[in-house]
Length: 365
Image (cartoon, rainbow, N blue to C red; front, side, top):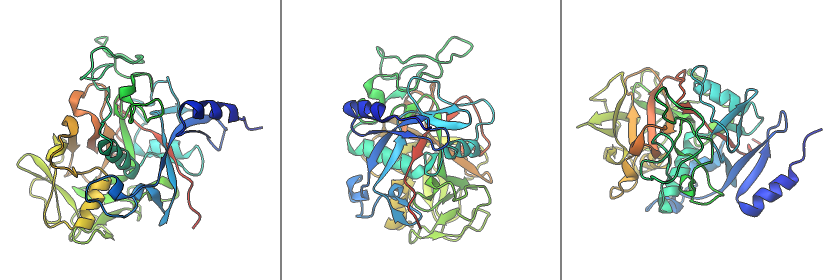
């Protein structure tokens, strides 16, 4: 008989009205999720369109809300959960993107590894509301704080704290500075995001938030992967070599990242980095296409905002590179909700790479 968590849910809601207890559909074990209601791009960025943010569009239909794991993912018997006070799951081996996607989806229909669209939504919400969350980016504390520390879970050979227990930092480590927020988006461990990759520098995505539905394959050869036509914002079938006509691609120009539609001038099969705030969008990219970049927090929507030193790492020469976000315990000021690492193969696994479970009611087609 499935456990009943009604009283637990009531207690959680009394303190955090926007939090939900959602049990997995296999064992009935609970996790804590933060409900985010549907919003438009104009709610998030200045000059944004009236289009619904893509995080709320799954399989071509809009959903009223998405549910983001309040805490970084914890692995229990091959299923990812959102739980406080635990060591985030970030194995030294066997923890690539496919493994996180599978373990998140193992909780049942609607559960998934956090997607690029969902992460982008959270980052834009934080900026719009005037606060980018702090976190464990300086060996157990934030580089901007000296008096606050979280509960250490792992240490390196020099005795320095690496992982800290989920949700044990101060309120500045919550995305809205309240107990009801999403924790540890800055540092602790990088978080894989689904539905986004680079192929020889070409940006490829799953449409909107289709990556939230595990039945939409994210395998390397999946037909769900689409390039973005920079001249229109339409999704197009990639040519497989990263050179699709008019597709949005990542170039490095004068040591800064630039999204372009033509031929990449500086391509490298190694990780390079630049400040996120310095990322630009070529004038050849139409407004509709640029809005996709903004929605996924892949380019700054405000040239006058400093994005607090967040860093953009990428490999724009490899056959395929997945994307993780947020930073880890030793990245200092380079960590944050706008930081991204697009330089790991999908099999990449390290104690510094974890994930986060999310949930959505999948619309019936």
